[in-house]
Structure formats: C-alpha cells, structure tokens
Length: 119
Image 1 (cartoon, helix red, strand yellow):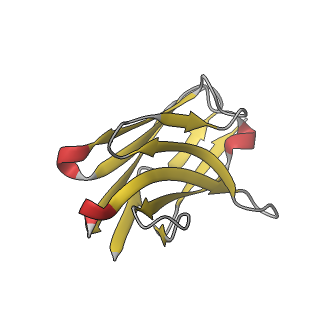
Image 2: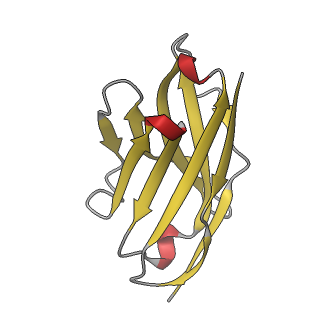
C-alpha cells in the first residue's frame, strides 16, 4: 500500500503561481509513476502531468504544457507540481496519483487539494 498526502492548494489570482506537494509513504519502493490529475466542478477527472519515479521522464497534458512543471524529490518520496500563469480554467481539485511497478494504472490516490483561480 502507498499513502499519498497533497498540500499547497489555495485561492490565487489569474497570472499567479502555486506549488502543490504530494508526499508518499508506505511501500514507496514499489513506485513506478506519480502523477497529478484534476477535477473541475461538473467535469471528469483529467490527467495533468506524470513523472517516472526511476527515470524522471515527464509527460504533460497539452492544456497546461509550458505553464506547469512536475518534479520529484526521491529523498523525501515527494512529487511537486509547479503551476505558473494560472488561469480561472485551472480551478479544480488536484489529486496526486501513484502507480506501482505491478502496473495496472494509478491505483493510489490522495485526498485532493483545492486550487481556485480568480479572474
């Protein structure tokens, strides 16, 4: 089992920056990918960015590419999402997800952290 705890959300204005953090605990040796997803009111959860735990290879959704950056600190079993030039449409609950080396997709989730961007 892997436990994930997000932090760093809040209320910001359009154009501001914000950094989200996700700390993993438990069977962290089994991590294969960690990622950020988001869910806006009335919409389905969507992929934002992911990072491979061993190689640090990153993948980004087109909607946030060049504005958001995902990176990790292996020593702290943490992944971060640096968000810049925030827009009102970035308003959502942001979730951290983890995939283990067993594969099968993102099976571990945090509780989510709210990001609200005012215009």
